[in-house]
Image 1 (cartoon, rainbow, N blue to C red):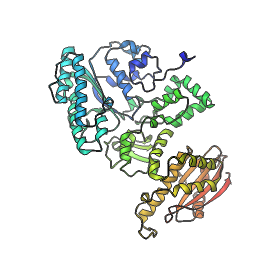
Image 2 (cartoon, helix red, strand yellow):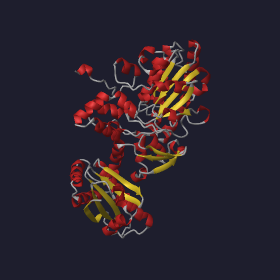
Image 3 (cartoon, rainbow, N blue to C red):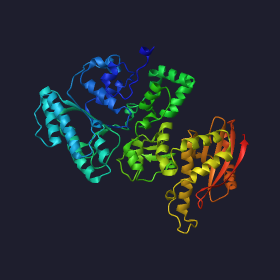
Image 4 (cartoon, rainbow, N blue to C red):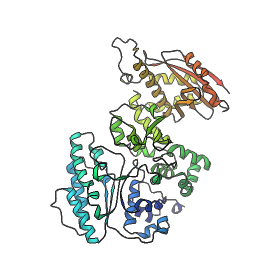
Length: 539
């Protein structure tokens, strides 16, 4: 019956509406005491659509003393006082300001709303938003005879809107600095302040000097504050798991594994705790199918802007070790790693000690996002024709028609724009510069990797094994391709390398058909020039 159907809060970020409408809610309220103990000025960075707005909305109603909304939740059972504070909640995502003047207007309107609510002012004659904000904080605190709570969601919205225009960006930063500096400047009147955003930016943000907030983004205590853990998935979504499995003819175990591969494995702190993307997970249950919901809701604009003007190498993201300082660093176009981590395109997969982390692409949905963004860059082909070409290619890969799928690859690789390969000789002669040759080979490798990712196959590159590093391995339920690439060489050399370094030992007891494949790229023709394979090898 439809009245018994689970309500999934798709796009709902207001805690009160979510609770009153009986939507499924993953209880994170046990973290409220940890967050609010002793007050504080906190900053949390998480990717877009990861639950930051719902978190602040939950805190809003908690500090507002709305005890009835928390019945049945952890905090409802454990909170004894339910003291009520004045709450100033600024949702910057509601502002579409493209200029400093528009941002100033938005902030003045929000301040005026609170002045009317608490009967302060009028202060409409005050031009400086910072001054008006500080007067508001002090006046409300004195009138209510208690300190105020300040919540600022998506603080970086105005920065993202103007980051491509240095003049507008500087004007925007002046307005935002004046506003954001007030909670700490007026700390004697503030009980608690929390700010959320996606990325950290230099010079024009909260992260410097006396206005510095306590950044809890990589604090292990808050590893699962946004997102859904494996246990939370099992505890809260049994009907959704059952229905999704029924729609797709999967067992319960197969359904959970499919969800894990598609949406899980985000890890933002040194803690081992991993979380699912909540937006995609809820949509998968609502629609009854796995899809790239997070990606379809809009690629992170800051990521797109970075990608459009920077070198980007997908293979470098396969096995990347960085220190904590770099991961927490502010955004700079010269270094993509902090941005990719903060926006959710990379996540922690391994740690060494307290400050060294291995990063990788977290799951299938993010991998699709990266591939979709890189597709126009690496494949100079009509995107409308691509689905048919990829479907034909995948069919040949799955049926072990190796000659057929390599010929398909040959067509796709030949479409790659020349400028991606670096400088070439005007006379068309072979470039023997070592760096250029390495760039050729790596570019080919990236292209093939992207194509296999588009096929939604288990394709991994530069895999470390006991004998060395395999260029690429592609696995299906029935077969395994172990692939070695050569530039301007012979395919027999690639096959010999697979044999001499015992690359197949990792699959010696697998039972599937294993194929050794050597593929040669030509730097002269900029395409696949030759290949060889040994078929049906079983270990």
